[in-house]
Every structure is written in C-alpha cells, then in structure tokens.
Image (cartoon, rainbow, N blue to C red):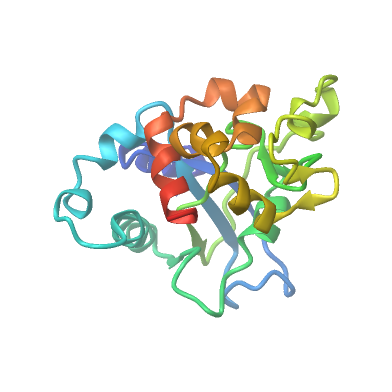
Length: 217
C-alpha cells in the first residue's frame, strides 16, 4: 500500500499521518519493521468525530485510549502491520524519539515536541509497524522554529514552568491549583497555544480541557 493510500484510510478515521521513517536496529520497534507510521488527530474535526464513537458514549473510563486501540489496531491489521500505542506500559514505546526520527517533529525552544503541521499541539494516538518499506515523502529541511523570530513559547507560560530550561512539572501543577490557572485548565496550555503553527491546527479548546483534566484532576 502506498503512503498516500494509507493517509486516505487514516483520514477516514479522523487520523492524520504525522510522520514516518524506516527504522534501524536502535529504534525500539519490532524486528521485522520496514516502515513505522505515526498517527495523530486530524484537525479540524477530530473531537466532533470522536464524541460520536462508542468509546465516548458508553461512559466507561479511558475512552480516548480505548478508541485509539480499536482504530489504530484496525488500521494496522488492514495494512498487514502491528499497532504500537503510547499508553499501556511500562515498558513504554519511545514516541518522542520516533517523532524526532520522522523528521516532521522537532525539539522546540521549550523542549516540547513541535510538529510541522500541528505545532505544539502535536499528540500521537498510535503507530503502525509495517513489514515492508513504503516510499516516504521528504520531510521538512528544518524545524519550523528556525523561522520563528518571535518565539512566543519562551515567554508565554504565566507560571514560568516552561522555558529554555525545559518543563518544571511541579510548578505547572502548583499554578493550576490557583485561580490564575483557570485559563490553562479550560483552554489548554498557554505555551502550546502561543505557537503560531498551533493556531492553524484547529484543535478545539474543549479537547484541550479534557486532556488538562486528565493531567491535573
């Protein structure tokens, strides 16, 4: 199956191909893998689609993970590959390293992954390990951050929890406990929203709020 055909099938499930690469021995994939595909939410429209799925409507825990397992697993079987998911460990699959290997995601100035299409809103719902080598499009020549003169991500965090030194998770949680943290909880991380590429991605604040509730119950 060609890359474009895979992208069309993924789009029908509200997913996008967020990158792919031909792995080597040190990439932590099954030994017969010729191509690793990375899948993320297709925007705009992902959240509206997901909220009409059985996993969301049944009221059981972990609806997004259960949906991801079903949908990514189904696509993997259709393509003759294996589904690899970013949850369910330990051990955990190295999605951060795989994203960097794809050439479409980069370490941002605040160390979070930044994607050429999703910006700092990038997330991965799963990966598919294919036994054959699929011809892949060329990735971007450089990080989108290289051409971003303002770099608003570096100064956006009101808690000073995200900057060039990385992510101070305790400081983030402490800020979210305060009244001033309400905007982050209801609309998503201000730093992620500050990225110019994130603006064009189309992720709904409602979806970001859902993830923030899981991060900071």
